[in-house]
Length: 212
Image (tube, rainbow, N blue to C red; front, side):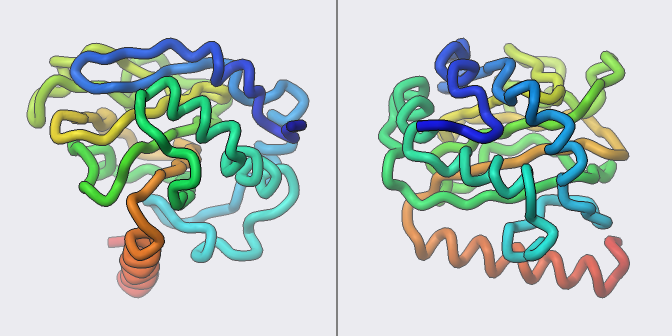
């Protein structure tokens, strides 16, 4: 299969971890010629938090639309399945997009049971190197310093993990632009519909109250 934006070899080469849960970290996941078009076509989101494709609507176009099509390909699910030791092929998928991060975002959590696995593709030109806004693979639900991996959200970095009761993760506080595309594999289409409905409600409330 030919991909417009992703470098599938970068995903194949991703290294894996099993402690404290199954995860992968890869680099060079975005093709070099696609970087500038993706930067140009990234949706112009004005509110913090993750938004669904439905929320964004016509804001998804050009190179960014091609990126989402790449991510949804069966080959991506197959490779992530092999890396995380779980069958994701054919499972329902939901994509959400974030451009802006608020101070309250990134709190430590494991993800709900409806989620089987999640993959994050980062699209930021540079990062300040302080650790602020960097995702951490954590050993517990309360200590950001007890981590086994720190992932900087630079363009081409990909991180995926298998959801479990111990899949603690989060990112340290950061306010500002932090571009990421999140693809989640869920148990059923009903779970997808429920999460999209919840996301739409949250989106509308944020607009109503000017993002809190």
